[in-house]
Length: 368
Image 1 (cartoon, rainbow, N blue to C red):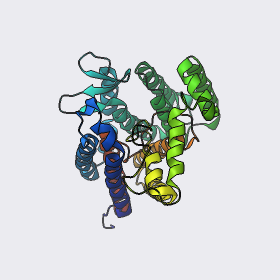
Image 2 (cartoon, rainbow, N blue to C red; image 1 turned 90 degrees about the vertical axis):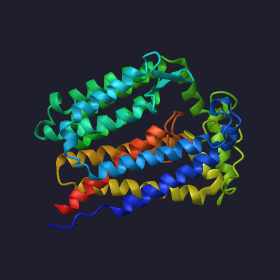
Image 3 (cartoon, rainbow, N blue to C red; image 1 turned 60 degrees about the horizontal axis):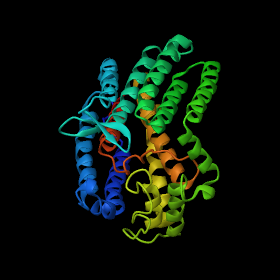
Image 4 (tube, rainbow, N blue to C red; image 1 turned 120 degrees about the vertical axis):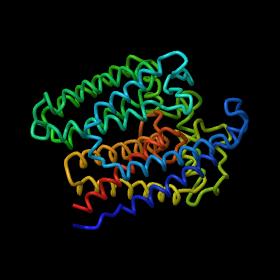
């Protein structure tokens, strides 16, 4: 029997991204937090939140590293139920928290949770368990697609009511990737995929706000002072960075020009302060992390481990691509955080716990 060992490359790259994220959140948020009543005019507000999230995430990651991931398969219905319950609780007065006309957070008294972040992990566990349990039946629509399409519709309705259309897109991409890797029939996958694109287009057209954002994406300079304001400011930020950047902490766009500079648009601040070289190093770090995730999936000792690793890695890749794509104008504007780096305590905790699962799978792969 081989000696059990963790994927130390994955540990190092995760630690680097988390620590770098804390540093960049502080740099991007200090001025905004210092001048906001919502943060109590505390310039260190987001720094403390991100650092505490990293601490809780470390505990979660260590716990998942030594918790046999195979036990999650038996708990998949309970985990999914908890995720959906948190999604429903956002609509309960006194429990759900409304910010900027959206209800996405749940007040659990000791911590505010962004429910959709927990739901993402729950869906990965549920699908990995279902696909591995029905591996021989995945080409049948009843087993390979129907349960997960019903789940997607339920989640989409809950997210549409919040509203949180960007999370619908993220979850749809995640679910379709896992179904494809799980072995669904390609004709079923193609037909449902085209239908999903059509349904998503209709949902977008039904909202004038989203149509305006799409038009602004197509011709951003025409709407530079309105719908495209955030994208234009992101491009200014990236362009200002040049090759080596303005220097850590020296961003100009974070002085109330670039919205959500500590969260959704933080990659633009990274490019401004650290330049093209710094941005490419961050992209390379994510590339290395994703490659390790794919490697773990390919070497997993069983189908459940393979699908868990696939889902976790796919989610990280999807969010990284969308987040970076939005600030560079490659993807229509939407609010998606950059894993491990953007401000967001729940997201950081869940992603670090997910890395713990990957490390657990890699450890058992080495022992096989």
